Amino acid sequence: MKYLNTLKQDLNKTLINGGFAAAALMSCILCFTASAYNDNSNDRSYSVFEAFFSFDRSFIEAHDSFASVRLFSIGLSGYISMFIPIIVAFPFMVSFCAERNNGLMRFTISRSGKLRYYLSKFTASFLSGGAAVMLGMALYGTIVWIAFPSLDSYSLPAEQLEWLVPDGIAAAVVKNLIAAFIYGAFSTLPAFFLSSFCKNPYIITCLPFMLIYIWNTTINKIISKAIQTGDYEIYDKLSPFMPDSPRQIPYINFSEITAPQTKLLIFNGVYLSALVIGFIVIMDLRTDKGN
Image (cartoon, rainbow, N blue to C red; front, top):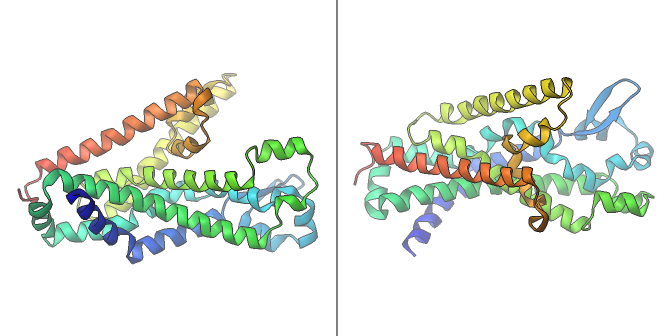
């Protein structure tokens, strides 16, 4: 019960502030950078935002690539995948850094206890990051649903509909929102870990961005070089270790789980546990936390 009271206070600090609103709004805006249509005639890719202003309504209604549910499903594939480590740090970073820099951390720990304080901070940052991205995704989906045709307005064969939305449109929407939440929540982990030994909000915000960019680029280069040599299985081997792999969790069929999916779950479980334990250990070694 005491933990829930502490968590409630931390959630109030992370959810009811300008950082959370900014994170949700930026998530929504960045979803519009996803590639909606590829024009083979000029080898150009159009983002969702560009497509709305570049093509007339008759063209959009003639190409099922612009179906609202399809555009919604690609929302997490634009520039949001690059900037998500920065976005998700906004809700908790400001309040946590202020609490440490003005000495309130020592007072709070003396009331709640060290372990309860650490776990509450983790849960609040994890939930706030996931909620911000999910809210931004939901807002993006609402705008897309209003601005673009529904999937039902296209004359698609049953086989294609079964492939696009095997469990129905409602289930596809729910899975995408859950994927946005999990992706956002896991993306808070690097910034959360850094906050255990760093007080500078700019470093906490920007360093995870650089690290994840290097991580993502390195794996993509390894995959590209392997494919050039004919190793087409390399993607299945390395994709579970990509920084955006948590967003695939809602699409796993646990009754028929594959080897790459098992690797994905194990890796992300170890990744989460290692950073949370690392945060607790480092925080416990600090001399400014009180007793």
